[in-house]
Amino acid sequence: MFGLIRTYLYCVFGVFSLVLFGLTAARLKYTTHLPSGDPLNNGHNFFDPIVVELLFSALLGMVWSCYAVLTIHHMREDRFIFSFASEILVLSTLFVLYLVGAAIATSIWGDLSFCQQFHACRILTTMLAFAWLSWIVLMCSLVASVVVAIANRAFFSPFHGRWNPRESTYSERRTSRV
Image 1 (cartoon, rainbow, N blue to C red):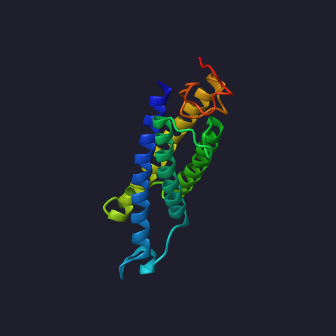
Image 2: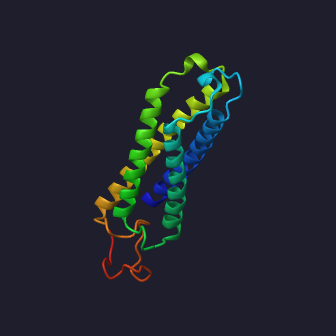
Image 3: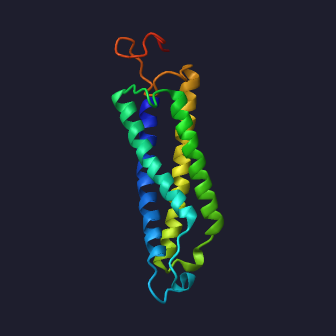
């Protein structure tokens, strides 16, 4: 049950990260290729560092969600990131990256209702929305993983969450599950 919920959350997080990646890329393309006469920054090209941070976070989020879905679905037990503890560490890192990016971007572009007639403004609004939505889904994934790890006392067991002692490479450490 929790495996399905966690897989679903990772899939949603992956899609949201993909959308955020596209929106941040569109924002970077616009600000680094301003048309002459554009009123933004007097027509001089620039980029917002927080957009780059959100782009990087979205890229990491896409990679992590693919890795996590494949690990949970195929019951992979890789040595690189294999346990609930390492999953929680990665999720915590992404949690902080998304929180910082969304919070700073919101403090810069909090209320954009005055400029919704412009395409660039609608991209910013949507970018903020998907940054916060991604963070919310990430928080739910983190809570679900912590709950599973605590409930099963499985912080150092494979994070796919399904144990079969005959098939697991870690069966010498844990032979039964509740």
